[in-house]
Length: 604
Image (tube, rainbow, N blue to C red; front, side, top):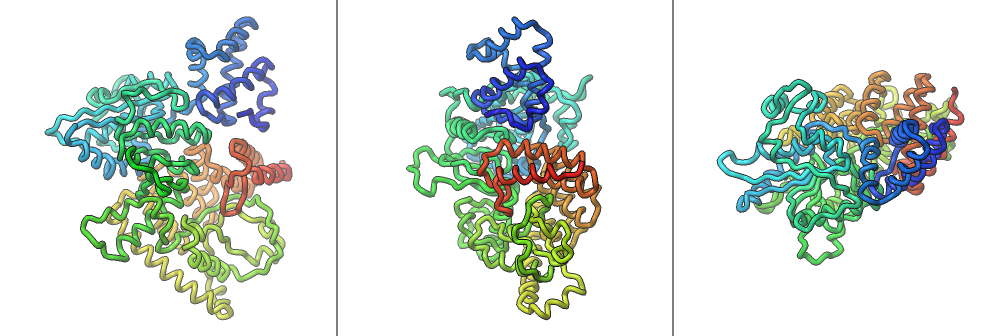
């Protein structure tokens, strides 16, 4: 891995000795720790090295350089301050309430039931940062164990950042770590101290902290095949494909047959998962370790995991079809909300939900002179066409790939007539004036009525699912999307707000709220949620581009330019042929070229 060209202007004022060492260290960070450094990481690393250079002599700098490039134990000690500088240790208790709801509702009770004979549970919290995650797991397990039974619970928490591990071992946390925790749990398991809050000793004793490199360290033989659950979230977004494969091999060795691996949403996209079967729940995707005694077949090779939006749409729609449209043949049928991905990819959902999305208008449309249709009927035709082709699109996103074509802008020659949005907008709703055009398009009118009936039916069934699983942010998000597509903005906002209470760190929900507010011309509110999405996920390209587009529309070219350039930095870390936005069939290299062209034409 090399330093992105977009970073070069930032380091021109840095001493050449520091720049030389920086170019030597970046590939080593990639090889030794599997980390792809972003521009912000490079800036932090540059400042650290520059401070180190200014504090010593040329002779001490040469010795320091040689020590970093060495591979001995003293070199590892010299590397630790660098690792502390470039690794992200931001976390909080019960982060991603949807995933913790899945653990507490389904996974942990199942593991406890299966381990009744041994009464022993072993959990691995990989890349645990400051300790909020392993302690959250300890609290969740403690609340589920029978009070009249004695259990041996061991939680192994590892990270490469020794500074973060030291904080975690202390068991002391500031109020910011509790921003998503239930106040009852806060009061029950934490005691106020002078500089924050101290976790209860009974919980602290369950967790053991240790340094472990997921890329280069080997799992001890005694630790292989003994773990019931491995949790490794928001880590692979920093890893290369090769590094993810190495970590997955380690997790495969660590887990017992039938045990579980939980990662962040869509972090294993396009990764081979021969050792795992993939299950989709309304709250999240989870991976189950296959039996080591089973002879692999072609069905054991799990297909690549889909983006979160597509995954949970299949989970919801297939669950509805399974649960409500047929009677279960036996009383022992598996829960309809546990869906194996092999089955889901080959099954037809009840209706492909349309997830309203938006993005900056950056991509020139080569077909600007194509035949135009009235906006309402074009939207109907697009949605109907998507529904008819849903059997050919296993990810249920056909409707996402069709954008209504507007005639008004094309006729006026405005800017939006010469561009193709990266993400489709909310489906246009017909006005009383435009509905009269349906007399000329009776087939489209009938299709529109049929589509409305299907949407109402799906809305009713989603509401029924919500009654059974009120804490499912995925179902709430689906309801919000349906209401937004039907023009019921207030209802959509209501469901979004409920979903955010359950999953406050969801960028998808923030982006949907931003889209709704943008449609209502409430641009300040739209910016607010897009800024939140960018803060929550610094690697998310979509909200960054949408926010840049909004700043450009409102005349803040400085902010727009800054966001466009940071988007370029993110794209530099992707393979050139990687398809960034399937809806626009754009590769990373194509989007880089168009972003650079757009920046060149951006008014200063």
